Every structure is written in structure tokens, then in C-alpha cells.
Length: 593
Image (tube, rainbow, N blue to C red; front, side, top):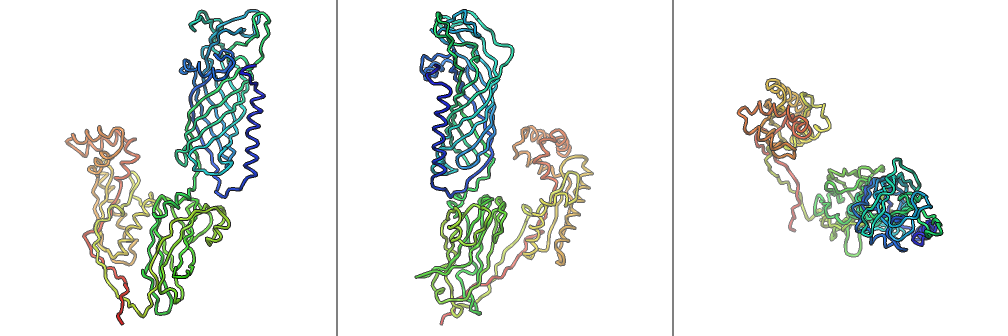
């Protein structure tokens, strides 16, 4: 019996090992951490190890590996696959690949292609090649006991069913030095098909939320004894054929990419200090009507707030001996279907203001306004209080923050107005309108130009009224045409500014600047273009820079069109001259009694 281990026995051992642990996982303590379900793709490659009749073992499976040192470059395989993780433990993948097998056998009675009339000894197999595919069921053993999608190392056994489409390699007679003495059977001209049953174990290393590196060892049982064209017999006298099927294994290194959108609320909690808080006024003040009114201003940075996350900020006034709870603020990620107080864009973050008013109480005199952030993954319900969050879902907590000092009674302070003076100049970086190639319609790039509208509105709100516009074209086509094009772009931007200003009296001086060849050279020089150095060299050495820029745009149009030329088709709005802006604000001044 090959390796003293039949296919049926090994298969039974794998099933007996997996099923009890699966049952244990189902009956164990229920985990509250949200389960990530996701699709993934993977690729792997490595060593193929022959465990067939022409392999060098002498009764023990590990002898194959000892002999394999000299066969490593002849025996390899590679796969590509796709899979899905159904929950904490169970997943499934489908993968296909290509590989090679070779090997030899000494001191064993063998027959070639079923011909038992001749007993052969000392045979070698040269590169059986195969195409294979299999469907596997996977089990994450560690997650059976404690679910953790961020665990660095996981142990994942798998078992499946598949097929192998192979072409057996040439079989040769070997001498004692393993050199070919004569070829007995050449490589078959037609491929043959058989089934396989893969079973193995994978060790995964979590490199990042979307990437796993893994080591996999898979043993493949086949339904054929013809992978090496050879079968064993008990002896050259009895001519009794040992009816074993060929087997082989693979030891591979692979990389997996997961198409999930992990909602890492643990990371949000760890990095909660990135969120900044302000309160206006600070310290809190009792108003003349006996109420304490204030704004809590929360600034969340970009690329922090997970798209499926919810944050509940619980403000409260803490004093010696107790606290006064205030209505929580709920922030929701951009893909959360439920509604909160504020929706946070992942890339941009944002600043959010919540207004409060409450009757003054004596306990407020010596207190501090505090805030406790709590995070959870949206599960179809928005929980309004932290008590309900604790009761119903998995959560993490961030650092407690002091938001403001306690309340000042109105009799002790008076309001005083002060004026802040600032100078505003040159809003080019923010207030830029862009256009399509050879066009001057702002609405062609409406979504992008909304940012310019917003920046201009901020200038108007700050009291700025005197502007200048500089419009440009990319150096494509005729120079006269581009001069006309930049003039038209200047005109439509001036019309847009007047429209945004509405009833406000503003002054706008605009000019079309034609082709921006200097900016063209600057952008190319600072880019990652493949032919960057060649373009800059031609431009710098040209006597007519304008003509050179136009020629380069035609020659390298494909490279330049993606990142360079769209930045040149623009109109910049700037403050015409430095202008003073005076902004009043109110502060509290203590009145001595």
C-alpha cells in the first residue's frame, strides 16, 4: 500500500479532524465582533512533489522530500483563484493552475503502461505536465475560538474536489548514477483527464486589511495511476500489480487580495485623538435669560472616518459628585444607510457644529464639559444613546476629551467686542476653474468647478470685492486659436463670478493669457512621465518655445493628456490686491465687584 496510507483513510482523517472543531465553534460562546464577508482573488506558486510510483521513497512519505532537493527546478506549479469568505470560519475558493512532475525509482519492480510481461527496474520520469482546477472548502481554525479579522497569523485547513488534465512525461531506463541509459516511453501525444481530491493546510499572514500572504501545503489524491505511465508489482515472479493511484503535493507561497471594505473601528478608537474639539464660548457662560448656550465644534480629519462606521459622542458636564448628561451627537460614515446628526465623507472629513441650550443649574458653576466618543459598525440600526449601543452591538471607545471649562454666571462677566484684522491675497490654489479640451463651458466640468464656486463664495463672505482673472489654454493647435480660447474662458468665468455675487458690487479685471508653456514645462519636469527628461530637454533647447511645446503635445499626446494638459486648461481667480478684512467677535470680560 503506497505510503501505508490509503486515500480513503486519509480523507476520513481530514473529515474527522474538521467536523468536531466546526461543531465546537457553533456551540461555543457567541462573538459580538462584526463579521467581515468578502470576495477575494489570489495567486500562488511553488514546488510540486511527486508521490507516485516513480518517486524515491522507501516506505515513508518524508523520503520524497529528501530526494526532492535535486528535483526542485524540474517540479513547480502556479495557480490563480477566486474565493468568498462566508463568515468567521467557513470560506470557499475556486482555483486553477499548471505544473510539472518528475522523479525516479530504484530497486522496485515496475511495469510500463500495464505491460506485466516485462519487469523493469531503475526508471526515471521526465516532466509530466498538468493543468488542474479544484473547488475547496476552507476552515479558519483560530476564528472558531475567538474571531479576530485583524489577527496576524491564521491556520486554515481546506479540502475539496477537482480535476487534472495531464500529459505524462517520458520514462527512461536509468543507470546507477541516475543518468538516462535509454528511453522506454516517450511523452504521450494526447492528454488524459482524471479527478483529484485536494486536502491541505494554509498559514496566512495578515499584511494589511486587504492583503494576506500565505504558505500552503496541499496533498492531491488522483483517480489515475498513469501520471508517470508506471505501476508497481509485488515482484518480478508473482507479477502481482499493486493497484495504487498516483498522488502528488504542492508547497506554495501566495498573495491574496480581499475585495472587502473593512470597517476598522478599533483603529478609529486608537486614533481618536486625531479628532479635534472646540466649544464656543469657552468657558461656558450663563446668558441673561438664565440659559447656558454653546456650540460644540467637531473637526474630523480626512481618511479617518470609516464608511460603515457610526460614532456616538456623549457630551456631559462633570462636577464634584456627579454629572449632567447632554444629548449625544451621532456621526455616520458615508455608506451608512441610517441617518445621524452629521454624515462624514471618508476622504474629506469635515467640521461639524452642534448647538446646545439648557437652563443654568448651580452645579454648573464649577464643572467641566467632557466628551466620550464610542464607535460601532452600522448593523441596520442607529442607536441614539451609548447605553443602547452597549446593550445591542459590538463597540469600541475612544479617549475621553475635555471640551471646555464650566459655566460662568452672567453677573460676573460682561460681553466685549474685539476686532480681528487680516489681509487676504492670492486664492489661486483654491479658486481655479477647469475646462475640457478646446472648450470654454464651465458646466462641462461642473462637479470639479463646484470647488471654485465655493472658494469664491468664501472670499465674498470675507468682504473681498476686487478680483482679477487669468485664463489659459494648453499648447495644442494653433497659437491664435488658443489665444481666442483663453479669452472666451476669461469671459465665461467673469460671468460666473457676477452670477455668484448676486447683489454684491464686485470689480473683476480679466485677461486671456493664451498658451501656458511655462506651466507646461514645470508640470512635465515634476511629473512621473516615462519620457519626462526627453520632453524637457527638447523644450529647453528649442529657440521657439511655443512651437516646441505644440510639437511635443502632438508627439506625446497620450502621456500628456492624462495628468498634464488638463491642468493647463484653466482660469484662475485671485484677489486683485491685498485687502484688509475686519472680523468682529465677542469675548467675556470679568467685572470686579
